[in-house]
Image (cartoon, rainbow over the protein chains, first blue to last red):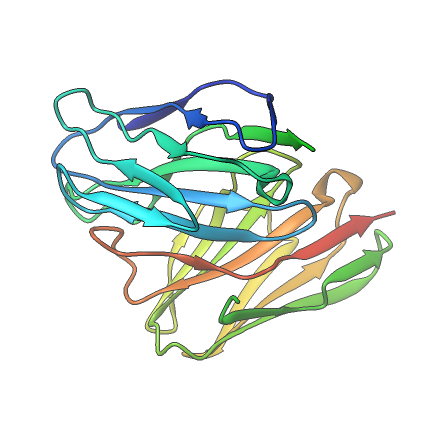
Amino acid sequence: GDSVTQMEGPVTLSEEAFLTINCTYTATGYPSLFWYVQYPGEGLQLLLKATKADDKGSNKGFEATYRKETTSFHLEKGSVQVSDSAVYFCALSSNAGNNRKLIWGLGTSLAVNP
Amino acid sequence: DTEVTQTPKHLVMGMTNKKSLKCEQHMGHRAMYWYKQKAKKPPELMFVYSYEKLSINESVPSRFSPECPNSSLLNLHLHALQPEDSALYLCASSQRDSTSGNTIYFGEGSWLTVV
């Protein structure tokens, strides 16, 4: 079945460091891919998405490129801030059949120190 | 800012109480969802409503009872809950219930504590 694998956390960085959170997937068909972010004490927010191969999603300085050849959707940011401390979830939605579920990674906790 | 609003933000209830969580969206979406989330874990799907009809029930205990009064509103009625039901309950919506190319938008959640 479809699945999402994220790098395990927690990830701890200093402010202005470069961030990469790895996400790989297995899926039938051509899934859409998402990154959601959850700040402490809050709900889930859509951070960015990509719906087809080679698409790049971007928002708030974060980027992720849909790589079909490596089945990956790694999240990157060039210079993190303390306010980026949160849990990041990678997710996919399958185009196979009438799938109605998002498939989630386990989440990666990021702590950014000043 | 999320366009899915949930109330209350925090709820403490005893195991014999009856309470409800409420959710509203004004994006014209026709699919609405309830998820349960434990701390720092991915959310777990509970129910999906599509065009105000229940389309997915993920074998959730009957002490959770969803209701969709209209296309903008979604309720979750709670009765005789257990302490292990304490969690963040997230409402979400999307244009349609198929996830194919569809984006799901979440509310801020309702923090439920069962004592």
